[in-house]
Length: 401
Ligand SMILES: Cc1cc2nc3c(=O)[nH]c(=O)nc-3n(C[C@H](O)[C@H](O)[C@H](O)COP(=O)(O)OP(=O)(O)OC[C@H]3O[C@@H](n4cnc5c(N)ncnc54)[C@H](O)[C@@H]3O)c2cc1C
Image 1 (cartoon, rainbow, N blue to C red):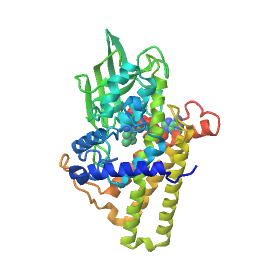
Image 2 (image 1 turned 45 degrees about the horizontal axis):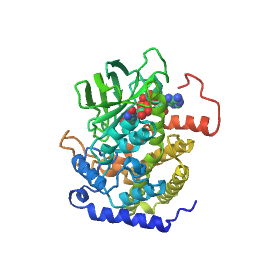
Image 3 (image 1 turned 135 degrees about the horizontal axis):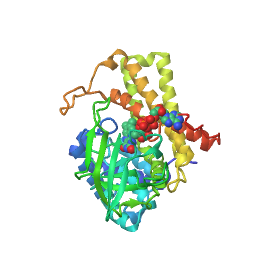
Image 4 (image 1 turned 90 degrees about the vertical axis):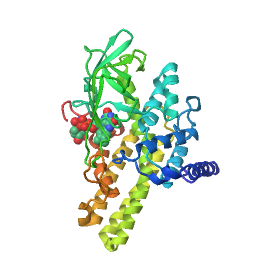
């Protein structure tokens, strides 16, 4: 695989660059790259307006087919867009769940009516989504979902509790995995429902994280309603549809993360140089190792995503997830080691909402990276997938977890 830009890639890169140079001004430039992981509370309304600017320019939902309002961009073009986006210090995106997870799932499993209703507002940046999978007893073991939906006339009535629901407090809709057949067990009898968040039967309670922000929430459904047509892939087919969404989560959607890593590593190198720590052989060795591993990560991700079409997670996606999650966690630890004792001194602004502490950018990254080896499938689960599906090892014994 030749990873150098071809003439058409150079042209595409310039087009992205020109768009960003022209539009990333005023309040958007002021916000800069804020609003990413562990920093989601920052500038949310500005970022919503920025999403509209991207949409007006045709720069949302790049990888979606043209007939669904996307740009039909190749994986390489999406990588180029992300690289330029990060290089320009553009704000964190607000609708990763809609654009990266629900949209591609609907394109594969949605009815024409569902696509006509739900895809255009995602492209336009008008409706935000959250993912209602995990429950107190159903995380890695998603098939244990207990939230149930019962038919009442032409509506589903949803009752149960979800947890760790990212951005539920900002979302207009939630894609909810729930049990529609009370007698069926495990993977059977699940359905994938689209549920509006702004209704009396939905209560969202924020969970405070280590970074002192509340990216995720508990969500309580108590008689929440959605129209009977808002089931994706057919009643009882929820498991298959839910897995398709997870495939997208472990695939192209992860690319966006990686392009920010380079800037973070560069910043840590600068800190090491300014503090004199870069003269220490062990620090130099660890920085060089991080650089080598990051370069390998980029090439491996590109290789594993090349030729990927549709909702089948290539097993290599698990290798990429395990690799980048672990790499980034180790980078955070390296940053703290380089900062030394000053790593324990808070350097960020306190948030007016809770009046408490504010972490600096490297501290935030160190703390949030703990979550990256958990969400989107924990490291242990990725190792199970690699063992069983890549290496063909025997399945883990039942009840081993
Ligand atoms: C920042 C963040 C955002 C999230 N956002 C969302 C969201 O928007 N929507 C959503 O639905 N969920 C979300 N999650 C939840 C996430 O998907 C779950 O945390 C994850 O699936 C793990 O589930 P759990 O927390 O219940 O842990 P458990 O599944 O209880 O696992 C506990 C520990 O046991 C290990 N383990 C479990 N099973 C096995 C096994 N078979 N073999 C070996 N080890 C095992 C795990 O690796 C882990 O270390 C988010 C999580 C985080 C951290």
